[in-house]
Every structure is written in C-alpha cells, then in structure tokens.
Image (cartoon, rainbow, N blue to C red; front, top):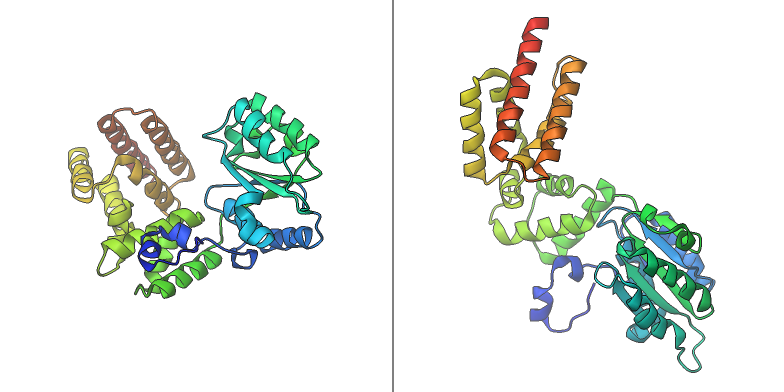
Length: 332
C-alpha cells in the first residue's frame, strides 16, 4: 500500500497499489513462506533470496513489506529497486548495483537490500557479473531476486540464494482479500459476483484486483454478464449455446452464430477457445473424440498466437466439431 495523505490522490491510486501490504502480517496467503522470512529477519540472519512463481502471487509485495518493516523511514536510503526487464544489461550491474552495494552508511549496522524484479530477463553476462557482486558485498548487502521462471536464472545465482516458490493464490485467500477491498471502498457486490471475479483472476492477485476495480467503475449493477462483458470473457451460458450450435446445427448456421457472438459481445476467437476446452471436459462423449477436440483447440490457440487468419481458424474449429458429431453418430 502507498501511504498518501491527500484523499484526492488516494482515490486516484490503482487498487493494486492502494491495497498493497505495508507489513508481512498483511500478506495474503503463503503463510509458511512469511513465517520463515520473519524468523530470518528477527534473528538478523536474512540470506540472499530468490522468489519465483507466476505473476501476481505476492513475490514483490512480500519483499517490499519486509523492507518497510526493516527500514521504516530509511526505506529509500537502504533499498534499491530495479526491474531487470528494463535494466537488464551488464552495465547496470557494474554501475548502479555495484555503486549502491559498495557504499555503507556511517555507523549503520543494518544491511542494505537490492531488489531485482524480473531477473530472469537479465542477460547471462549480467547474471554472472551480479554473482560476483553478491559474493563481494555480502557482509553489508542482501539481494532479493524475483522471477517467474527460476530455470532462467543461472545455477551460480540460484545456489547463493534461499529459494521460495510462490504458487497461485488459493480461492479462499483471494476472496478474503477481495471482501476487504470491497468493504474499504463501500462497494456493493454479491458473493456470487466476487466468486466469478476470483475465478477469472486465476490465482493472480494483481489481475483479480484490477478486474474488481474495473467492474466497480463500469457497472452500476454488478452481474455475471456485466463482469464477462467488461473483462472480455465468455460467460457459461454463451459457451453452452455455442456448444449446442457446434454439435447440432449446420456448418453455415454455426459460422453465422460465431460471427454474431463476436460482433455483439466484442469477443475474439482466442477468448472462446479456453472456455470451450473446459466445457468439453464435462460433456458425455468418447474419450478419443474428446482428445481429438482438445488437441484441435490447442492447435487453434497456438496458430492464433502467430496471427493466423481468425476466419480460417473459426472454420477449422467448426469442422472439428462436425467431425466429432459424425463420430458420435456412428458410435451411437
């Protein structure tokens, strides 16, 4: 959370910053990780850290919360924050990081902290240079490396850090945080709608809170349809209707229904592929037919990521289901 005295400025803050934890006690989920870090900090034995895991799972919030507890008003003097995806070259490591790590405040017995976010974007040369700096200045500087993929961090850096994996935030912890925000903002929303937002967030706190704020600003009455329209996600009723067309209607009629859905609801084909795949898992059909459909949907998603023709991919999707209909009729 960013502390701002001016209410007008506070209202303008994104909720992801407004409700960022100010202490480790406010960190949602990952209690085991927080407990271990607390013990390190209380004993004055904080090691170099490597936080890895999917986006929006609390990696940056956790280390910032710890830093605010450790340094208080001296935060800006004792902490260097860098986003390695912007400053990823060896010169940044040699100049900015080394300059910060090599200086010590007079009469201070507290170590400095360097936070390297998205360090998996750093070049290999920069990572090797960082390894040498970590070795040289360990006496009065600690490093926290943050990344999505630990496999992209060189083994020499990994071995110098205590590693913690941040998993997607559980639904119960996510809903608890959403209710806290809703109550603080005096925003009226049903538990069912909160559950829908939580599901769309897929364990990513940043994504989920952004959806909640968008919904609060865009919809006077919050419904599942309004949430799906605002976020560009396809609702379950629309998926069920689409499946009915795919499995029962002629090819031309299904193609026209697809186009109407995309035009009226502002959906792209890629938005439809995932909910279709999830719904296929609950449909009664032969395992082989389901596997071929899921593999075909996967191929479509892959092709769309390379900007292939959406019209051609739509026709391919419809033909997949027509072939499945033929197989289901033949075996019935």
